Image (cartoon, rainbow, N blue to C red):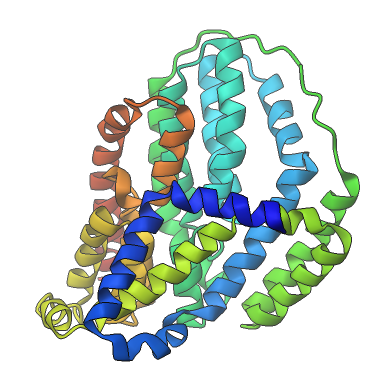
Length: 373
C-alpha cells in the first residue's frame, strides 16, 4: 500500500479544496478544542459507507475497460457533429444516474478528448455541455451524486420514491439541455477511425456487475455498512488493485466536509443567522439551497442546510439546481473544466451555466410550489 499512500498524499497536497477544509478544521479546533473528541460523531458514516461502495464498484467497471469500449462503439456510429454531441451529452447524463457525476465525467471526458482530436469537434464547448448533463442526470437517483446520497440516507425513503420525486425536474432539465445541444452543434459530417485496443478484463467486469445490484439492495434496506464490507472483502480477495486505485483522498475530503460544516452549524452566530433566513418555510429553504451552492458548492450546502431542516424534497431540488450557475456550484464542474486543459474554459462555462441556473431554478420552483397548488 506504500505507492497508494504516496499517490493519495500527493493528490491531497495539490488539492486546494482539501487544504481549505483542513485549515478550517484547525481554526475551528482552536476555537472549541473541547469538541475534538466528538468529531467522529459528526460524520454521517452511512453516507460514507455508501459512497465508498459506489466508488469501488465504479472503479472496478472503469478498470475492466468496458466503459471505454462502449463509448468508442457509440462514437463509431455517429455521422454528424450534432449527432456526436447529442450522443456524448446523453451518455454523460445516463452514466451519471448509475455511477456518480464525477465518475461519469472521468469516463466521458477522456473519450471526448480523443474524439475531438480525430474529428475537430469543439472540445471545450462539448465538455461544458457534458458538465451540465451530469449535473442534470445525476439529480435523478440517490446514487447519482454525493448530495443525493446524503439526503437519501437522511430521508430514509426507498430508492424508487426518491427517483419518482426527482423525475419531473430531471425530465425538464434534460429536454432543455438536449434542445440547446441540437441548436448549438451543427450538421457537419465527421469521420472517426476505429483505433480502440483497450483490453477487456472480463473477470473484473463480471465481479463488478454481480456486486452492483446486491450492494444497491442492501443500501436501499439501510445497511450500507454491511454492503460496503462485502464489496471490500470481495475486491480484496479477487482484485486488490481496485482498492489501490480508489480515490481515498476524495473520501477524506467528504469526512472533513461533514466535520467542518457541522461544527460551523453549531456556532451560535451561524445558528442565529440561519434562523433569520426562515428555513422552516419551503420557499426560503429552496432559495437558500440554491444560493449556498453558489458559494460552497452543492454537497456542503446540502450537509449544512440539513442541520436546519428535514425537508429533503425541497433540499434535493435546491442543491441539484444549485449545481448550475457558478463554476463552484458543483465539484463536477471543476473536474470537467480541469480535464479540458483549457485555462479559459471557465468563461465559456458561465456563458451557458448561468442561464441554465435561471431555467433550472424556475422549473424547480414551479414543480415544487406551483404544480402542487
